Length: 208
Image (cartoon, rainbow, N blue to C red; front, side, top):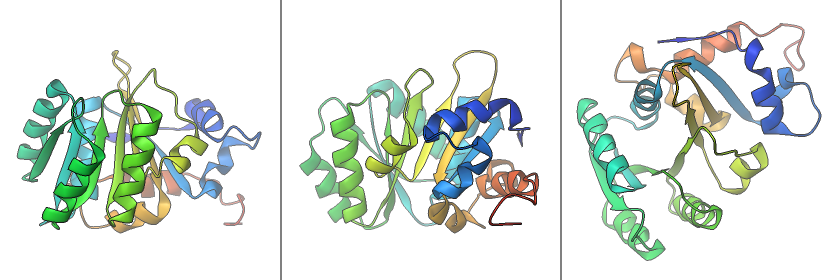
């Protein structure tokens, strides 16, 4: 799995920012965008492999199908995961799980959820000192202001067709903490990010 030339995808970053700035300056928002030539399974493996530290665990909130696929994925990566049914879970249930299991470092939502649900879960995760990961379907549009307001630290978006180009949007302060975390060099979003940083023009402020 490799990063790709992001120039054909600058409209994606421009749409995320929505403030008229050049997409070349997306990094000035405090978030980083990583385009990866791979399918959903591989990009999800890369994010979870990189963001969940060794000896930490994941809390996943989603529907039954999503939970089953994520159970298998986490088993392959040797990551313990607690699953909650997204259709029935209450905020108090999530809080109880986080209080009872201090090894959980990341809360993740997958599948369709309302904006209010995501906002409440994101705030709860941060209040309890956990990072917040969200996987969205390709046809779901989240602008950068949404990512900020929903307290999202890592956003995953991947296509359902054969283009196999996925997008990761990550808060830089959280992304730098993934250095050395990846369980395999094949699934290392920090390395992917550094590869993209190396392709940036040296004339861009404040690097110039």
